[in-house]
Length: 392
Image 1 (cartoon, rainbow, N blue to C red):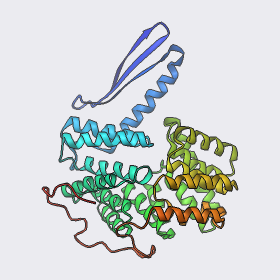
Image 2 (cartoon, one colour):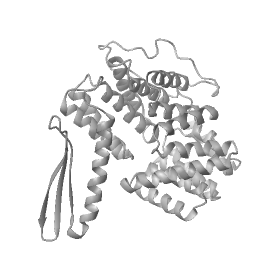
Image 3 (cartoon, rainbow, N blue to C red):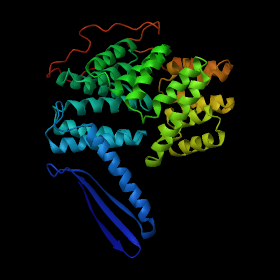
Image 4 (spheres, rainbow, N blue to C red):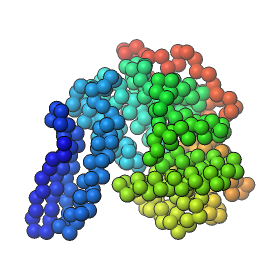
């Protein structure tokens, strides 16, 4: 049920809205919107989009289902975390992590919240802060989720992400496989498994996983743009353009509701370049740089697009800055067809060598990227509840 109030003072408006569960009367979401009388239709659009997002999150995470929580406050923190996690950007994801932490503090048995906490910490680790404390946080949260709910697919995804941030691709693959055995349609398992296969150069398998992930979540903009890169590597240019078009259309729709989402801008930029829409591509690139121009995610993806556009100097400068952020992107760059135009440039080889030197292979990384490491049977077994804080 949607409820709220409108207050007017002169030409100023304040609209307060609440989304309330009609069954138990619990407030799922609330927000206040301020503006001038002439902005009333913009306010109306903001309310509609925020309610839609809140409903999407609420429907995606039922509070009273198995592995959920019966604590209303813990559930509220979880929902808030999901909302901010979906908005992208380091600031939003860090706030999402805070909310997930509050959820598990409120209800330590909330397995889904532990898994979400691990995913949030892993996202920060992969894109912005790969420090050992962050890796340890992923370890703790994912191990807790697995101990609480070994039959929950999300628990295995969270553990797979721990292996991803440690560079343990074989163990990550085993965890994602376990997740898909429990829920074959879990987007996160398909998506992250696909990324692992891409980084290992197993592009055919990555394509299969990304295609299935797109089928499961047909409004996602990431998967078609990633399949675009694989199609380009295979020389299937018509398929690549079709995928780019789907990705750009979805990214544009997403940006209508989330104009500060640099992930959508960055990947959409690559799609626009593939579609030869140079003017719009530059506009999206400049928007992303203005919002978060020091993010490795932004710098790397824009480097790829500028390489395809033939702007080698700018591409190399952005790629070097991305590598200096400490996020390991060398593995991804090895198989990224967008970088082919600058791959033979001596400066590119120097940048790649520097990135590999700063980010040597991590624990468990197979020497041959094409051969996955088998996961020992005990690798992801639930830990005793009193095992204490894990070490890196």
